Structure formats: structure tokens, C-alpha cells
Length: 414
Image (tube, rainbow, N blue to C red):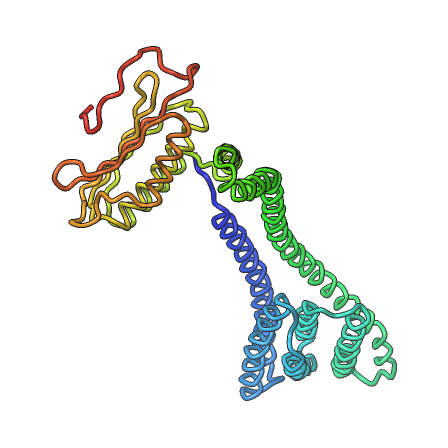
């Protein structure tokens, strides 16, 4: 069973966001290349017909390359929060220069609209978009009208009447392009908001869980600690005058402390529950990454959750000890059901000369966990260079196997 951690989920969300960012930028890049291809395609016929010379062709090609660079920069900075005013002004100047090529070929009118499509990706108001489109449309309409007047044969004083028509046409085109790109910008903003919302929900869930945990601990320990404090003070006052009464009060303190410890362990067990199969897979991966060959049995099916959780903690602590306190090159994890109990044995071949068998706080905590379920836990040298960690956890009566096979002694080969 694959279990994703919080860090893995956050990484997956970040990867999805970055993938959509790249897809969005590539779509704009393809549009930019298409517009550039239109401009380059218009240079050939104009040069062949003698309308423009080679210097102007080279200048136009340079301007197209520069505008493409500005376009990609406007797209990237616009999606990230807003393009700089300097980039907008400089790219507008390049666009105005290239727009003058409308006098040689009407196809060049797409270049100003192409520039508008990049500018509107930055945060702008509707009034600003309208003014930008109107200014661009007026510039293109004037140049297109002049170009049309030069192509009319004979003297026709009414050629300039097409100016309003050109203006309406270019204004509609710019507004359409702006609307399409603003819609794509809104889609990008929705992805950012969804990503931020997932992060906020995760943080809120963690905060609520911490508050719940704090409330539970307060409810569990508040009364017990208050009782312990009162009875301890009472025992101190009676220690000299009434020793038997003081001893009785301290016995009550011990009982209250043990009861509080039992309740806290029961509560914490739910917060710190781990899955046995997921822990086995994670330990195997960690040991292999550390250069320790790991062989692990498949966990028995249908184990009670409390038994699986205790065994998972034993495996986790055992793997930590292998990495931190041994020079092992091989580790085996054996899980076997013997009728009424589950036996876990972790062996490694890397005992160090010193401190190999000294129990630490981690092993002590494991012994307490196993003891809560009525089991047995032990750790120490096994053979010449080996170290054995062994836990025997009894199964509930309803989960015991049909055969009452006795649990083997430590180190017995199966």
C-alpha cells in the first residue's frame, strides 16, 4: 500500500503547478513564433517587388527578434505578477517601428495586436485596456489608410474615408485578442489560488489538530496533575507528624500518576499510529539508500491495528539503530505468526566494538510499548558480529491462529 507523506503531497502540488506554468508559457511562445512567422513571411514579397531594400529587411528581422524577446519577457513577468513599465515602453517603441512596415504590406498590422496581447497579461484595469486598444487601433488605422491611399490608382479624394472602418476593425481585433489573453490569465490565477488554498487548508488542518491535541491533553492531565500536586503537598506536611498518612497519600499520588500515564499513552497512540506495510517499505528504501542490503518479509495479513502499530515502531527504531550505531551491510526483518503471537526479529551484521548492546532511550521506549500489549522485547548481540532486536506481541483471542504453536526462543532458525 502506497502511503504519501505531507512532504510528498506538497511536492506533487508544486510539480503540478510548475507543469501548468510551463504549458502556459509554451502556448504563448508558440503564439509569438506564429506572429513572427507572419512578419518574416511578409518581408519576402516586399523585397522581391522592390518595395524595400536589404538594409530595411535586416532592420525588420532584428526588430522582430527583439520584439519576440520582449514578448516572452512580458508573458513571464506578467504571469508572475506584472511586467515592468520600462519593458512595456521599450517593447511598445519596437512595435511602433515595426508597425510602420504596414506601409509596405498590410499583413504587418498583426504585430501591434500581438504586442497588445502580451501587455494585457499584466494587472491592468478595463479602462487601461480600452485606452491601449484604442491607441493601437488608431495607429494601425492611420498607417493602413495611408497605405491604401498609395495603392489607389489615379486621384481619388475619398480614399481617406476608409479610416473609420479601419479603426473599428483594428479596435475589435485588439479587444478580442485582449479578452482571450485576459481569460487565459484568469485561468492561471485560478490555478494559483487553488494551489494557495490547498496549502492554506493543510496549514489549517495542522493547526486544528494541534489545538485538538492540546485540548485532549489538558482534559486528560488537568485533573490528574492537580490531584498529584494537592496530595504531594499534603504528604509533605504530614511526613513528620503522621508518616503512615503521608505514605498513603504518596501511594495515591503513584496511582494517579500511573493512571495519567496510561491515559496519555492511549491518547498519543492514536496520534502516532503508523502502518506496518508502509513502514516496512520506507525502512527498506532508507537502508538500501544507506548501503545496507535489506530483506524483509511481507507483513501478516489482518493484523490488529494496535499490534501492527507497535511492530511498525519497533522496525523504525531498529532501522535507526542500524544506520546510526552499526556498520552493517545486511539487515533482515522476519515477521512470523506463531498461533497466539506475532514474532518480529531484526538482525544485522554490523555490531561495533563498543556500545553495541547498551540500551538507549529508544529501545527503552519500545520495551514499554510492547509491554503495554503484554508482549516481550529484547535487544542485544547475536552471534559473533550480529545484533538481534526481537519483539513478541500477543494477538487478541479472536485473532489467534488455530494452531497453538509455541513461540520459538530468540535466535532460533526457522
